[in-house]
Length: 247
Image (cartoon, rainbow, N blue to C red):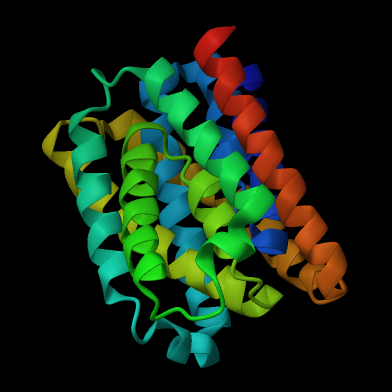
């Protein structure tokens, strides 16, 4: 690996780690396209999986007192894990254009009418159907691209969670997805010695920037935090459409 590739790896993962620590999302959204330009899409997805797993682990430890939020959402975890497992198998064969259009439409709906669509009762039938569906599709998206935040992030944004609750919930779901990814990619032979070495090297800038992002998050008021989430979701959808139809 030359100096240019090393700088791309460090800078890309540092910026992505900062976004992750601040908002609970955005690491693969930022890092995967940057690394794909140097290492190729499949290799970039595999490399990024290692920092994703580590960063979500740190966020879960940092927000462990929020663990009560996870009660009652087991169906979301199951659906997300199944979707991710399927996504790892579809990594090379999924029709990305159709998938990108469906994801964009679902994100637009949740951003525009998410709070009304979900309602105030998490036990309502529509919420019990939508939650697993969103997490399943988000899991497929994470398994194929490592980027599940457009859909999953917009869904939980529609629930108007506090910053700490939002970050912890997303970290728990993405952590499970990452574990499934690691298993799936390992069985497919994607974790070559080079990929593992690059992923481990990328932990240094990722976790240092993540810690800085966590500190910055504490300075954001709730309204600013929600605005930041909307910006990241819009950027993630724009990035998905660009990669699918233009690049």
